[in-house]
Length: 546
Image (cartoon, rainbow, N blue to C red; front, side, top):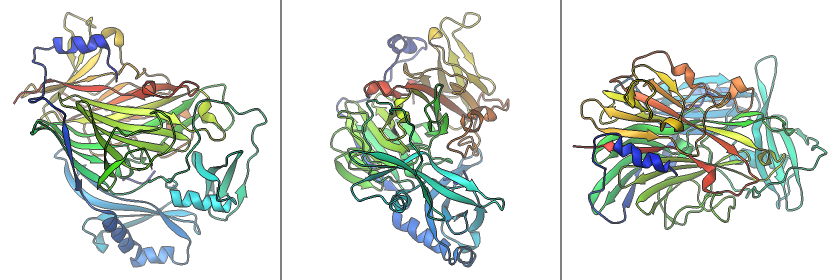
């Protein structure tokens, strides 16, 4: 697509601190952590005004005059350039022209300068937004007491010889007693109701969809500061999923993460997410999807709105994974709350009938736990009741102290060769997880010795033919935020992660390094939801001196 926008191995928990000569990282003061949230960046009003200015430019007006069109995606991005990671602020918008069967892409710098706005046309199509989904429901003669929800894939394209295409939304219309599928052509208004399979639909524990509206693109960045007893522990910027980077978004995105004043991560997010169905297949299910991580769906968080897309929750935020396992909630965005000695950032996402939970847990001792959860709702064609697999890939841009002078070492016990448990990664490489060797990775600053470990989660699975890898160590490049895949449905080769494209043999010792980490989850919705549906590694400090 064109649009740029907890459990550990108990043994490992004991062995990792013993594997290096260091003192445990402990908070300076006791007590419950506190968190402050401050709005950062531009507002909805800023975005709406910028897009309006762009739409009023003469070349844009000429293209869209006398057409039926809708802005489907818009947002601000502040992307790093070069190894110095200097940033440039930009806006982007995607306008779909239903009359012409094309997408108009607008982008430019901030502050707005009409001379710097670029305009291009494409036959690729943006994601569906709530207003468009509601319109499709009306076109399909949905009654007011019915729920309209998106299917998978969310739309189908009908291509014409001249390169234009029609946009056909794949929806489900559900009431208390029945459900049906509809394919709604948003260009010419025709509606097709596909025949349901004659066999009885699969049954499982997935709850029904709530039918609430989602948010697919919106500004929202917050500065977050975590303290304990007045001492500053963590500082970071958090970006809501609807404003996250990458072709399909990347969940809650972290930037400029520091612990006790020193850099840990420049950026951390989940830009790649796959779904895989294996034979025997149910009609209309997969077999492969590339999902998106920018569509926020409400979770339950009662509290105070602090910044656009950020709410401080009075108690732990609840998603579909939490009892009573209901779909939806009262807030779309990022819920922030304190739970024990951790500060938690949590968001619920929607991709068709799938529900995902994007979560980061910051412990006062310097441990960071990235988490990603998997759930679904019960809607036709009931694919979620068939066992399937999810593959989520974190991109972790470690800057331990500095962007350069970083080293990645792999730990194995027993050793793979020789007598040392460690070996350095000198060049870009892909590595499998291996619990039998207690394998983990340590990222160090070679000048200061400060070190963080990356420890695989016990629920994170291992790679297979479709979930193509576990860990990649690559050199940082500003244009490698994701692998560029733009389809939702397609063949295995069209949809699976292509992180191997970043393996070009470059040196990574004493360089600016990025680690991609894959988690592979077998999703059996016939079992109860809960913690077993959550994956993610642990990022833990080993040495963190002055």
